[in-house]
Image (cartoon, rainbow, N blue to C red; front, side, top):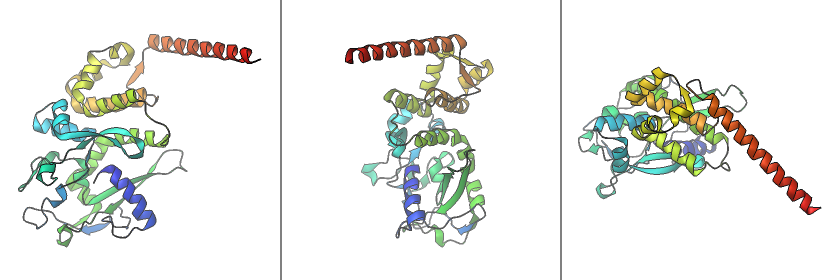
Length: 302
């Protein structure tokens, strides 16, 4: 289930008790139990793989484009559409369904998922949903984590006798591993959300966010073929690592976005001293110029 849909439904179901939703309005913990099994031959096999609004995380894209043996550019062009995510309006890539084939996922056939071992994280969640509620009263920024079940009418998997705990299901599906890979990306989205709907991300920032979080080849070129290394101080060992490793590059990208878009500090990259000094001087000069303009305007009104 897409992240933005989960966010909306949690609010409606868990807080307002909406009737008829596939989300079960019961809070689950990691040791909570449920019965479920999906396998070839079950009546509803692959029915849940149609007409879905699947938001791909950065790690999803890295895994899938490696699986297919194509570049990020090619993957994005063939299999995705850009989308602005919910109230945050953060740019993301949405998996494009095949409308001429009943809206099914492009990686699903009658025999099942053809990229199963590299399937997106939202497919791994199903039928368990995850919600993390940031507790405003805690200055530490801790998050309260809980889970819920998604029971859709067509799904026969809940009629099976195989029993799981939320913990064992997520371990079996590698959901926790994917969550760790995407945690810093989700933190960036939470940062944007904390600014409120009225704070719009500039177009250039949106373009940068989308490029860094979806296209490793372009981001690598951005680092090594622009003035990036002349602008930021980055450890040489880290530079060698991100030159070859897409996952390391992705994680470095999260740090870069944190600095470049949200103005946070990072141990992995810092503005070079000369660049920082020049930037400070420009800011001071701009402020002095603005102050003089205001003084002239004030005098003209007297």
